[in-house]
Image (tube, rainbow, N blue to C red):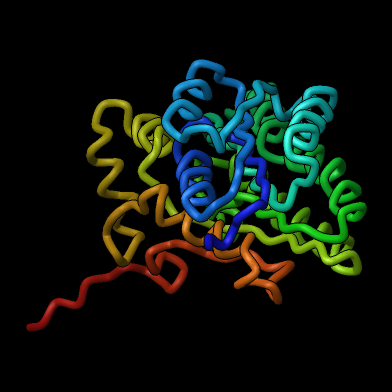
Length: 262
């Protein structure tokens, strides 16, 4: 018996990276997953790999009507939505605050924050009707500290933690748990884009600079993040709600200085 036998999840930003790794783990433990993303071709490839326990719906998660539609689709397929992972996100431009175009700021806030707000606004009433559920929101280590050159992204990830805490308080009386995860850099398309954004002429140098702040001296894998997510949505975490969980290779502990013996 798996932890998620006869349970149903939906995951946004699910066509690759953390979202896809989480879907894979959930299915391996007996569950069924609806994958949500804007990239239909990537979704098709992902569901082909995951097998019959996976289905998909193409949606712009920052759009209110499309959010309503993807949640209705997931509910109609499986009756209940026992767990949701609001994982969709973009990195936005690498630029100082004064050099960031307003349109770029608005797009980051829409994809990263508005999408989670819209998802919660639909999921919380649904989960109240079914007497419980679990939601995990993907924030970032950038939701716990600042990063020069990423003002829009950092603002969005801080906002997600406040939104998560509010949703946890509103959901608690109905058995709905809401948590967030705060990964340090993960080996995905996003970190490759960030490396190129920080240092277009030498992404490898940017990588070394980023890793200098991670005591374990490597990026996380998507599966390492997925393990925390499936823990939080499982009954093993039944008393966990309203908390942001760092998964950061020690980055939050302090500077990753190397001690040189004389």
